[in-house]
Structures are given as C-alpha cells and as structure tokens.
Length: 268
Ligand SMILES: Nc1ncnc2c1ncn2[C@@H]1O[C@H](COP(=O)(O)OP(=O)(O)OP(=O)(O)O)[C@@H](O)[C@H]1O
Image (cartoon, rainbow, N blue to C red; front, side, top):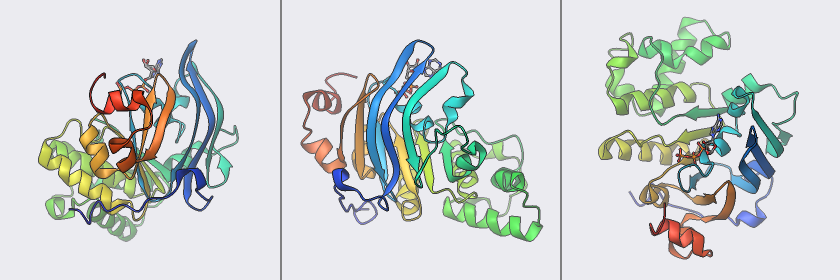
C-alpha cells in the first residue's frame, strides 16, 4: 500500500511547462449574477493526483468543469481568465470542445453507464470518433477494461446490459469508458462517495496506477481520502483558492488558519 501511494514532491511555485498539465490563470466564473469562482491561479502538475477540497458549494465541481468546458452547457455561465492545456488557452472561442473532452475525461459522483451493453458503453466514444473495425474495438475495449481493473469480472459477459453490474463495477465501467479515449487528464467528481469502503479502496488503487499515464484531479469531501491518495491538495473557500500545497504539508502543517479549521473538522 505504501509504495502504491508513494509521493515525490515537486515545487508547485516552480513547475516547468513540461511538468504542468493545467495552468489556471486568474480564472473567475459567474452563474448569472452569482460569483462562483474568483481569480483562481494554480498550476496542476502532470501525472500526479491533485485533490480539490472545501465546504459544499465552494465551487469545486465548477472548477473542474472549467477544465473541459462542461460549464458551457449553462447559458447563464460567464468566465474570465485562462485555462492553459498543452500551451493553448481552452477558453478561446475557437477551441474544439469535442476534441478537448476526449483529452480531458470526466467521471461523476453517481455511476452513469449508458442504457446499453458493457461493450457498447466502453466503445461509445470510439465509435463517435469513427472507429468501426470490430477487431480494433475489441482490442480497445479489452485494454480499457483491464486499465480500469474490471476485465476479469466482466470478460465473459461483455454483451450484458451495463446496469446489471454493481455500483462499484459501474463506476469502474464509466472510468473504462473515459480511458478508452486515452485521455491526458481525468477529472473525478466525488467518484467514490456512493461506494462502500472496499470498492472505494479498489478505485483509489486504480487511481494510483493510472497516474503513471494521466493527470488526475479529484473532488472529494473525504479528508482521509485526499490525504491518502493525492499528491497535492487545493483548499477552496467561497470560490477562492485559499491554500494549495503538497498533501503531506497541507494536512500536517497548513499555513492558513482557515485550512486548519476545515481539515480538522471545525467547520464544513
Ligand atoms: N448550473 C448552475 N447554475 C447556477 N448556479 C450553479 C450552477 N452550478 C453550480 N451553481 C452554484 O455554484 C456554487 C458552487 O457549486 P459547486 O457545485 O461547484 O460546489 P461544490 O463545492 O462542488 O459543492 P458540493 O461539494 O456540494 O458538490 C453553488 O452555490 C451552486 O449552487
């Protein structure tokens, strides 16, 4: 277990471009007249796990949704500032948002398999990309299910409906669906909050393996989980980034009183 979650700390203030997966600059966001994010500036390291923590309603889900422009779905949403991925500001009006979302995958709190077979769920995005060769799809489905640590459990029933799977299996299926597109970045919005402790551990171990290949950003209310699995943690309060540091430091010697109060459960 210890080696699985082993950490190698980078200096967040001095990350090079190559070490940075997402460079957030002065990002602010409003839903209609409600200010939800205010001037967030942070560099999210590549191939690491970064946790976002903070009280309910502080803007965690809204912030990760800025990383694949999911907030565009709301016409009353407006944002300012930059989110730079691969050297480009994804907020630029000419950004190809469909392509962006294949590079930046997202998994939500409640597993949301599509009403179709396990196989069709995993290759859904690939088919949208125009991949139709059966052999290619077979290989990609097997690989994604192996990567999501689900292959052994489902290999003999790939054509059964996805909703026969347990909650934890469905969540790994949804992760497999995202992984089939080989994303560079995976956004996980409270991925284990609906799961039992053993299944949660399964998903946490999976994250530790996946970070060798992609950058992971996880929203969680579970401080033990953030401390256990993430390399870096950002604490938000009322849409502002209060403290951002490597997780060992943030959870043992936070610099701000507000952070300390939150992580020790004095509020929130
Ligand atoms: N589509 C929307 N339209 C209007 N307001 C929204 C929308 N989405 C979120 N909000 C508001 O933005 C604020 C931040 O919400 P967000 O879901 O990002 O918080 P959160 O920190 O993820 O909360 P939780 O931990 O409860 O999931 C809240 O006040 C919420 O009501």
